[in-house]
Length: 233
Image (tube, rainbow, N blue to C red; front, side, top):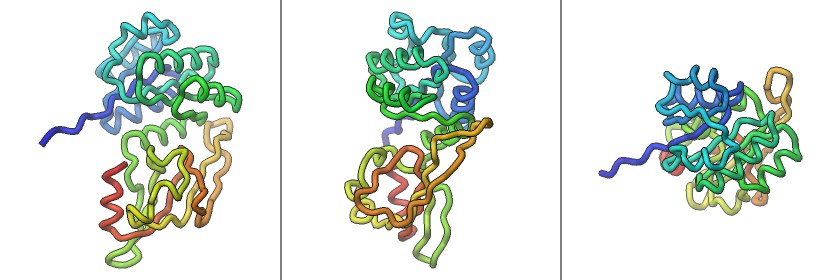
């Protein structure tokens, strides 16, 4: 049987958010490349990851030479430097990174990042970094609550293929046999500690409901269907 290729993540920027993402990915067994222009931060990560790069991510020639050919997900965490985050996102797109997640610090920053090629934009701080790492590495069911010997409620992160899609287009019920009962949506506003300031509960969303990256789903179904659904995550 062919071995499934492990995803490779490259984190650009080792500030608070970047460190949280990188360390969480590492703790969960992820294959991580860490990169920063600060030699002290690079040195601090030398023994934590297989590959650490002392690199200016806004330097096109440097990125072209960097060992990024096997990277599946590029994570741009230099949000405080808006110009650097935008340029890095553009250059990673040009470099051929399949999926790019960039951090924003404002609504207009988020819009620009999406326009220049970011597949996903997040602007949470430390707690958001842990949640992002969890979703990237282990998007499977977070918790199951038995209803009977055959049925359960399952809490899970919105799967990557669902993000940006309408509920009716995911065939969650028709294809997977799961009924979506509630969506918990974490707001992107943060307090001084980097925690989300509010959450929204959407009860029995209709078919036109559009999934977002921060969504946590509560679905009901057979245990066998839940296990089958986990295979696509």
